[in-house]
Length: 458
Ligand code: ASP
Image 1 (cartoon, helix red, strand yellow):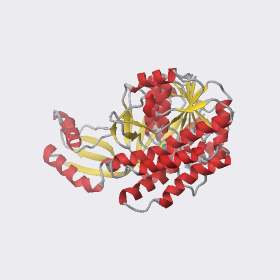
Image 2 (cartoon, helix red, strand yellow; image 1 turned 45 degrees about the horizontal axis):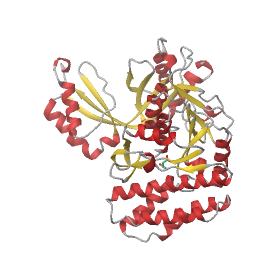
Image 3 (tube, helix red, strand yellow; image 1 turned 90 degrees about the horizontal axis):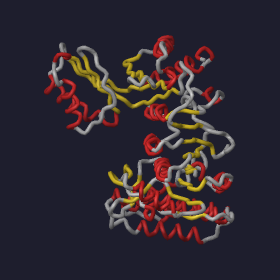
Image 4 (tube, protein in one colour; image 1 turned 180 degrees about the vertical axis):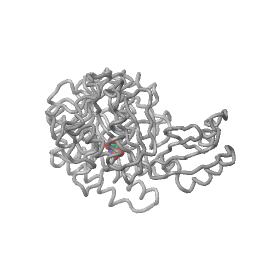
């Protein structure tokens, strides 16, 4: 059995939805269809989820919601009309939205926001199920509530309660035909709607693939395959070959540094259950896409991708004879923990220690407080915070046991006149990370691409 997930761009209008129905009907193994809310139809358009957020904000402020409400309903109505699905489904969606809006005064703002955000996927799943039936195929909408998708944690950033796997697996074993399931949300134990982070329909698909032990989790989006680096930075990457196979480890490392195709957290349930993930293009369904799996045939000395992520800062702490002071590192981390700051990397020298943090966790207004705490508790000779850093990740199983990979990267950056402020390689040897100033990012990615994928890099 295959679980397929279709993103917002694959369901943005009637034409796209027709492609989705065709794709699913082309393979009887495609039994579970996870859907996002309708996405943007063109550059200037707004995703239904964003419309719903504006609608919820208006309701929370007590403003008139009629226009936004109409815009949301209209998105579904146009699709239903073009596909001749009848009025019934549009009325169902309209009344569902009204019921949700009516809860504004009964719920805490975060709970209400999640209830509204989830309406995008929930109603789309109902509409897509009707679209299958209209093509004469037995299909049903399944609700996260009835199937036991229980979430915990914060509203808007929820996580799966692991007990859900057994419930989901039981629920799906009794379904036949095609099941259309809304992505992005589940329910708390006390019955409130809670959403995953934005882009979270990928997570739902991955959870269901794990729960039913799918043969493959097909994630349909709008690219033929994953590119080895960001095509907005290196345009020619589109002319080369996309990535055919990659391992879970490679995907994880690339996703960490901003590879946008796949939601980072989404990989976890499928990876744990060892389900292969196939990223495919709704607009070119005959393309095989990129397969992400436990292992692959690896050519030594090759790299699978280069990723870059902006928005990092670095606390640099220097103290003579730091290496002899027991507990120095622990005390730095304690200060961060006491202030609720999560750190990313911690490269060190003999008398210096760096702590790399995402800038969002250490905004400028908090900097002085943290620096003062470090000064007071650790008595360093020098402490400063460097901002505007970019992390470059060079990733590939083929780098393991191959000498000279880091040298190639350093040489490429040196030739482009780019200085590195940090180098970090984990013992897995599947990736290394280089920190540079954000202003050098594009030049650095281009130089690395040339070094590893250009003619001389092959
Ligand atoms: N519709 C949600 C969003 O825009 C979730 C998703 O599409 O995966 O973030």
